[in-house]
Length: 276
Image (cartoon, rainbow, N blue to C red; front, top):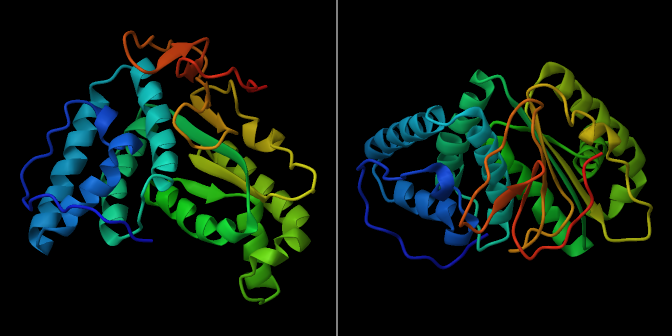
């Protein structure tokens, strides 16, 4: 994957994020900008820059109360996903930037007693599925989350059990067993309190939709943040946030986004289905 971009000046100076809002913002292509900066440095300067970046994230996250920490977790996981669809590329710098920022944030989240589960439910044309199943998991894995899903498990069965080449067109033959395996793995994540992404990128065909009951089951569990997205990752689309019991979410006044009844919404968006 490649895009045309302008490389910012090299340098290992400190990172000047005043808040976490701009660290992953898909609208400004913050991840790509950060990767460009890292990739312009020497190895030694890059190592120092990554250490400074991680320390900045740790400081910003540590200053947040629990309500704001949950809100920032929502923005982070959403921006990681949306960034893939906005002139994204995969490179060592992208991996390192996500690891230094999102993985550091996830460590702070865990230290504060929280676990994050992101559930994505989407249908995709066959021609686009292979690339998405290769790169979208890589984004979340760089952030330190376990990633599974019916289609990913179908490919795993295909390659590791039946020793067949990776073949997107063969996913329907493995879909039911892949779904069962993904549910077993995600249930284990819930029990072990390990943050995860459940990626249901189903083929756009006539097959009935797969149940997400297991993936969504920890909603309302103590210390558990569940984010659910079943709309395409476009500007103005809706995702749902189930905050941990006892955590009061702030209301964002005078901004594009606001918190309403436990969900983060953007104005002028239609109301979507709620988490059960």
